Image (cartoon, rainbow, N blue to C red):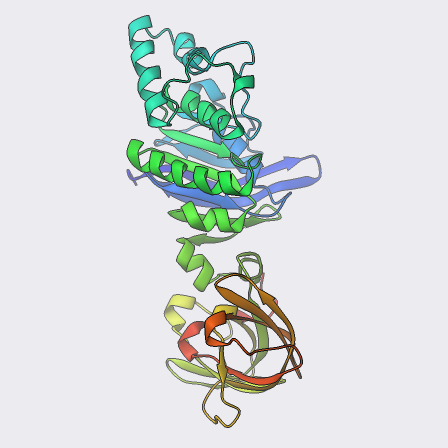
Length: 368
């Protein structure tokens, strides 16, 4: 229990008739970089605001450092928050912006100076302490906002879409910087974003939320490869969701009959905790585009998809994205290494296959 710096127990947040967060329960360990990801309006920012004390839960408990904090205001919590709009004081220099929180805490002048200069070095802003915010780039402003939050030495740093105002190249750079800084200072970071790629690139732990409900949680690899809900499977990257009925079930394999073929899947029933995993059950499995290969038309092995007509070929740099029309299914998304398939073209009819270990059975159809 001591390793959990944050616990949420059945937390709800309602605004009138609107349920923004619905019975959210989770545990966050000390020193983790946690990313809460979901579409606009999913409840992720509301969840962050409740952690920071800017909103109070309608019901349920929020526990930080072993203490119930439901009624505590932001200033009484061991958290600080970095917002997307930076919130810098335009009339203050970089140094004074960062120093402000220390002055409010009545830290002595010499210690303030030392801590501000140290944090400027940490975030890569050495020599810029006398500039005003209007003289800084977007990335530099974000670093000042980050430094201002870190200099007061919180236990938890909350980041609300911190990179949303930056261009793509700068976002990637700041993602690396945030990860470096978090590992260096050893704090718990909780970062909200709608960007799935950003979430997977920096998180130790991902929390997927939609319509106020936590849909999935785990390492980026777990969430991507073994989604726990249909929403998570659809939201986290490209995916092909295939439905069918269980034709046969053994201890570690199932045969799934679909409208365009019968496929064999490896399945660990204990890990997946599937409901209704019996012959005749209607289920959904996920097939990531990068796990599909081009097969020879004469192949007769397992998990073959014949008569797939290529309708689009999109060049994506190191790989090509292929859309193939499969009779009985529809559009199947396939990702191939371009150098391995230089001649693939629109209108071509191809065969495809995949390995049993590279799919994940979600369970009963339409369970979200």
